[in-house]
Image 1 (cartoon, rainbow, N blue to C red):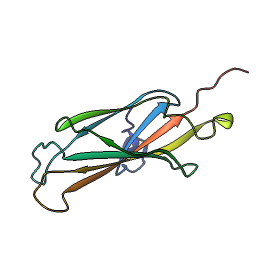
Image 2: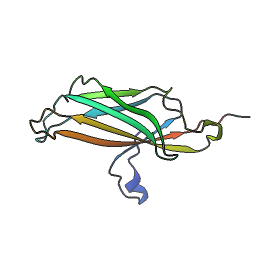
Image 3: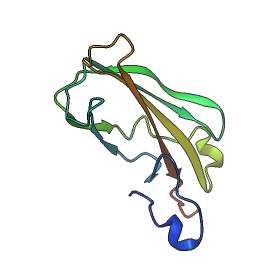
Length: 127
């Protein structure tokens, strides 16, 4: 679920997309690629990586994705979306999804980068 009501609570708007997910659940991230004029464009290449920024740990190394069009949905499997320290998993963990796309823009540095923050929330189980 996208968190977007920060302004209503008197908090500043964030310069990145902020999502929440249960630990171990699949995460879906939508992408739309535009060139410098704002027109939809299919990237030449796409890669992403996922890091645990709460505990400073890599979760998914840089991974290439085959571009299928100007709009895509990335599915990160739940097996990769587990908390770094599950034995003490109480509360949440912030993860940073870093996406780099090379666009066929004609310039040598035609790449776009974006950051999405995913908050993994622990599922409490009775003991």
